[in-house]
Amino acid sequence: MDLVFFLRDRLEFAKYFYSNASKPFTNIVAAIENEEPPFVPEYNEPEEPPYLQEWQDAKTGLESLGLTALSMVASSLQLFLNDWVHLRHERQRGEKYKRKHAKGWFHAYRKILEDVGLDMEGCPADLDLIEQAVLARNRGQHPEVLTMLQTTHSKSDLEKYPSPYFVSEADQKAISFDDGELSWWLSPNVYVDEVKLEAVIAEVEKLCKWLEADC
Image 1 (spheres, helix red, strand yellow):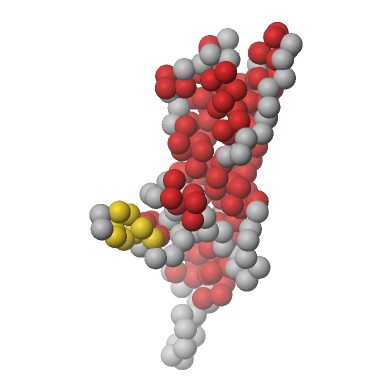
Image 2 (cartoon, rainbow, N blue to C red):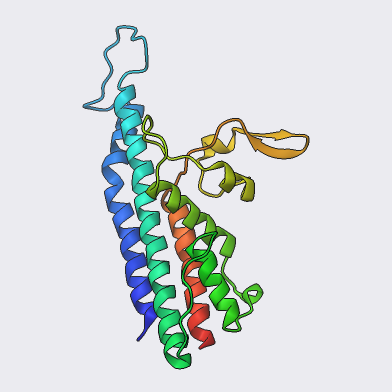
């Protein structure tokens, strides 16, 4: 079975999904910021920027969409790794490898790859970026706070990756330094746009192509 072919098919759909589903939200944001119909403000000195709620809803929609697309990428990788381990190793060796790990399923598979003799230091993919994608996906799938729609990075994730990839430019500017150490006043939102989505997709493809080439 050509596992990479089916993986790519799923990843391409994730890109297609985000690209097309994001258009209504980006159009609303652009129309409000450019004061275009139907978001032409009335000039009566409002207490807050006109259409603020609509703008915030569209922004939250984009954030939620990014998390959904990222979840599609993470689940595609998990499916690939499951089939790769089964078809390329378990079936041949008559063994069953554990898919669970205290640090999550990605660590479980990394251990399996090491157990079957792969040198992960030689992997051309950015495994840290892939892990950040999995952690961000987990945050989106398991929200902790009822009172907010946004998804934030956890304290433990920020301790491991103090300069996370999946944050907006605005949140990047909120970074501060305490005794030379990078820190955050508030946990930044998990942010996935088209560029970030395509970047992690490229790394997932590198990992999976490398695994298949090793067989």
